[in-house]
Image 1 (tube, rainbow, N blue to C red):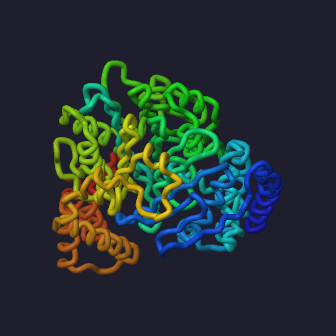
Image 2: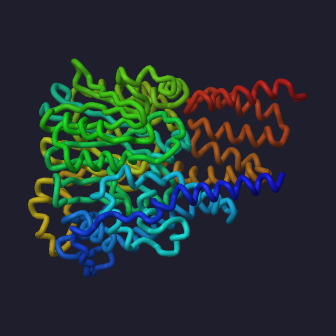
Image 3: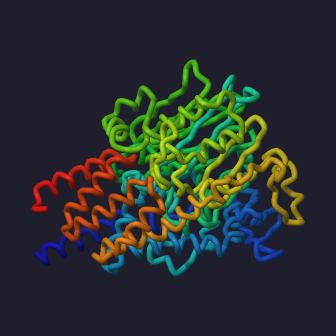
Length: 554
């Protein structure tokens, strides 16, 4: 058996090596770009510049980045300015991998698989974006080169969102977005809002970057991102075209193609109308399913480009003036897909979709403030309490960011920590790119007078309890895993921190079940079922425990 296993592993290494040799040697064509190494000047511990490019941290603890030039110039500027942030972000990401895969042998298998899986990634990313990634990769940590050379490793990371939501089956992703225009907004112009719920830990979400990119070719644009990421998850250009992405239900992809964030980067850099965005999307081969909300000031409306590895559909409302997207498809081309039907049935996507529509219907005219209020909403349908952190909430208090666009005015509001509860910081793209060379004093480029105040919820006992709940919930997981004994006082304390959240009763039920205290376990599981449980499979799992208890001797 061991010989057979060794043979399989040896064969895999041989196939992986043969299949990846070309990609492992690949470098982008940078011959026609400016390769001058930037000299970074430090004005303070949180303010840096090189030429017209700069990075600074504002009072809301958001990093503001401005870069310009050809692709390589931009990449080198991003890398040199964000040097320490870039290194920290990669370490955070791969330390998470080390936690999941502690074995050196398994890590070697994983690295070989990663290189094999991404062997054709470079064929599906335009040279322009490869050159930008190449520039920033010159500042990546060299001690991670055992995974892949810096350039390829940073290219791989641009597909992490895609691979994450496919392999983890949406455990990390549950985004909600909306658009309103015409008689649904105060001035008739388009407003869009979204929560980006891509969560891979608090450390990953700590250093958010509001990036302003002035490319040599294409339209200047902004995006909300993190160190090392040039793809766009949420962004808008000076022509008033916006993009946001919501993950759809995917089968596990067999090979990496165009990362969704690179596709949306191309759209926001080169499209000014919805038709132009659709034309770009139709030319790309992707490897996961995604819904891309595209808003356009010139069209004064928004549509969904719903794309899968083998299909593309466009959904737009025919007679209405509001559009909502969560994590299932709505276009004729994809709504009947069996995976999509399963997603609607089993996940919390439909619940959030209904709640978003309910909140929009309750407001006759959407304003930026109302848009922010919707993104911050923590209650369920008809305002029922969900408990804090419930995935059914539009704001489940774990999102990477919330963002609101007003494209006709070239205004964008970006959430600051914690979650979407901090001040929403306003930026005026027309002013920023008009005065892009006049930031010698390195002060924040936010439009402070248009900022939207922090959520009063931050000052409540409930918020403080939620923060403590997050600490205790991790302890609870440790206690369950290691079968530690819990006192009745601790159980009461744990549940009192978040009393409307189903999880606090479910985990206590598991504790009693582990200890064969079936009557107490049954009480907790039954109480769990009175709460708003996040998904159908989770509800069925709890019901299954109750059925199992009925067969036990109580």
